[in-house]
Length: 613
Image (tube, rainbow, N blue to C red; front, side, top):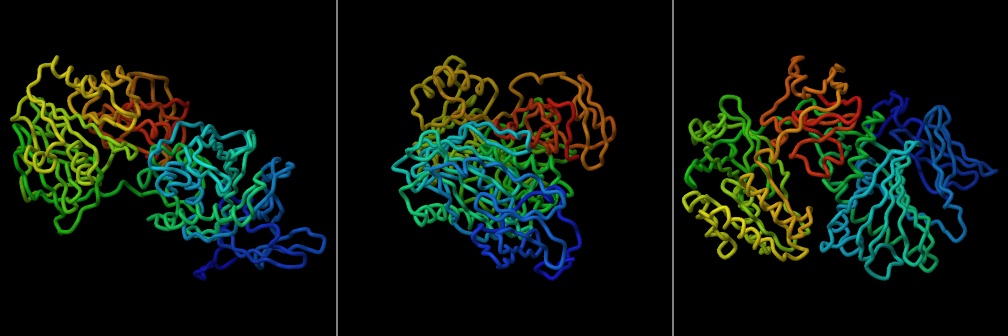
């Protein structure tokens, strides 16, 4: 029995998922012969001693002995009864290499957070600008992630343009990375050094988890640089960690959330997504944010204003009934709105950067309405209370763009108006082209003329041929920094995509927000076994039925709306297995991460699938 820092007695065993793993607690030189080191590991006090022969021994204070080893310049401890083999690193002892221990740094956040940040390249241009990245080159190119037979996680084929990749760098370079995670708290990075083709500097980020929300990071490197002093190398690498530290310590959740309803890694972050899936697969609980008991409760907002902004289009201003600001939104975001009659509909936010006290949405009355637009137009009035979700964004602006071309059709103006207002407010290079049936159908003319003078063009009442010619002109001869964003009727979306592709636009520079499915829902597939993680129930999903359909047949409720894989209402977390994504809601990066899926249309590639339901 031990006491933690709050003097609470610890009588629970070490989490079995990591009980037999090895943890670095210092450099080998810290333990001189005949001396005792005291360290804290997994809320336990550890004594490490090196005897006169140089051999290490360790024990938890007042308890049984535990394993201790010197390895790769560090002291490693295992608290479990059956220690796993220490990771192999033959390069460490290769001729011409040297080892530099760059210090132990306390970080007030969970150790898993530190490891995930280490694996993430997407933050390089913004956190380590002009060192590991630049805002002129923010793209994270595709790379391969795998879990090998030793249960080590590898990310290979990682490349990033870096102005100053190491202390030995002489200028900008396209640097090759390989990440290796030997256990949940011990990642390594193989990084191609300047002037040594075929070699790799190996950076160690060994995390010593002290509490679930606190850790010590041991930073070391095995390298082939023989021209810089240990002090120069240490200063460079500690600068990097020093830039990460305040961000790591500012997370709302110090422990790492594995529940996608709480937090999802960035779209570019395939390594982080794979890391979280791996932690779920091994059943790790220590240092992990508890799963949400239920989906976040919807916000309640008051309809402060309702006004006509075009023929058949009503705009609604939503505010907090208690006053004060609402949760922030980003351009391109939408809300799930719960309507009278039980419908849930998604409406894009039109907000400008100064509209933090309200949300603005616009709804077109659809002739073939299934109830949603009719309810908003006929049943919702100023003073009414509505339940809405937090803002969600699957149509975000790309921060690497130097110019933004916005193409709106009809009610598709709503997310693009928000984008244009935000970009214009910061004097970005932006132009909005608005296609609609007539001038009377052009929504938000007042806002467009007031805030986007000279930055928007109305294309009203064009024939299909004129529309095609106009779109071809817009997409002809763009530079590499231009990104296009399109939202509107399906024919316009298909025209922009086909025209852009024919003109040589890369797919990653064309962004689309669909209101309806672009094609028929793919039917059928192989049968598979579905397990509901919360109840443990297992059902068979036959080839001719969807997951949602099978769940309804066994009285398992799941919110749905479009049932076409467009709206995201049924989004759920994948605990195990590999989904077969058939939706248009998730981004390519989110699909590659396999952390979430839409069970209304998507199925399973694996024989078994486990969902957090």
